[in-house]
Length: 254
Image (tube, rainbow, N blue to C red; front, side):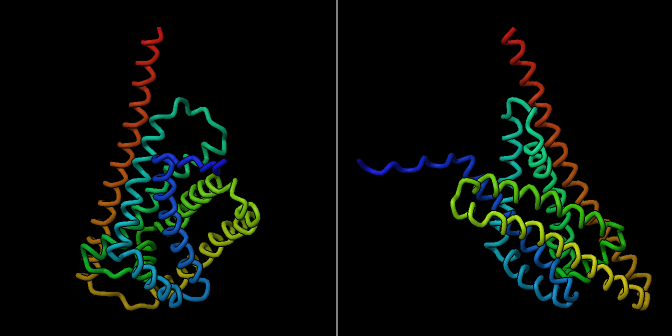
């Protein structure tokens, strides 16, 4: 009797898992770079240069932004197709954390990639952290890492929970999933302290340069807000479509 082949993974699940894995790897590299800040800001800058070489390459850009767009669209499709949102608390937590990922990735992409594309600012922790300090968003940026990381780890756990190798190493994986963001938080706070000290010791720049930097920061913040507003509108549209579908089905059944 020939061996029974495993059932092929549905296309939707394969695309969701693949795109989610790319985003998880991006967040993992992001957290690892932050964790290097525990050593020093200079060491974190060296790690950032490696990450930029990977994610800003043509292949890295295609994978990252393609995975982001695909994952968001699949999430919206899955949200629309669900028959009910009365789900277990763990599942609601996973979905809610996943829907918050664009808040992190959009803000980070605007502060780094768009700052480079528009104004030629190379990604440097010293510049990004200083800009966050000026706008008062340093704490927000740190807090937004948590839900995205939680969603990614929960998704990978659900996908691999029946795998024998994962079962053997699951406690190690859990420890690493908890330790990495803790180290990243410590590294980020250390970089904030170093950047704050450097900012306080630096001589004040010219009024023209200060005005230019303020205008650039304002333009980037405006872009971030526009993208997040469009995302919020898309989410609201999906929820509205669910409501319309429910009313239509109720009328048919009546």
